[in-house]
Image (cartoon, rainbow, N blue to C red; front, side, top):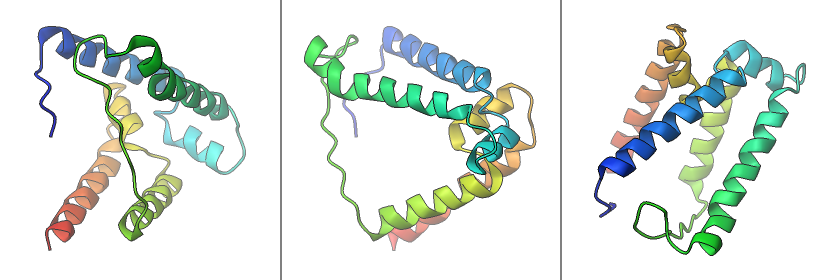
Amino acid sequence: MSTHRLTPASALAAVAGGALFGYGLALSTMIRPEVVLSFLTFKDFGLMLVMGGAVVVTLLAYKVAPHVLGKPLLGGYFHHHVSFWNRDTTAGAALFGIGWGLCGVCPGPAIAGLGAGNWDLLWALGGIALGALLQGLRAKV
């Protein structure tokens, strides 16, 4: 659990970042499942540019920013997240990929799609929430 306190500046930064992310998803048409499915079936490679841009931004945020800035702009410190692959991680990644491939919906674009009025995405978000609930219940056992 994070001990970072929510300040007005960090809340505003989170809202602005979320709005920018949602706008980028809408602009790239990633909020439309048919576009994502067309990409996943190798019929349209337009989202390859989106993916490449995301890789560049992530590389800068995780590898370059800590060295250049020293500490985050809104306080706190940069965390080092060690990840371990295990059976649960592999199964979860596979289920996520299968679900994404079947319906063309990922959680972020689904929420942004709701903002654009695509209410059919509620079905996908319901499935995502149900899967998260089931995994959480299974993890408690």
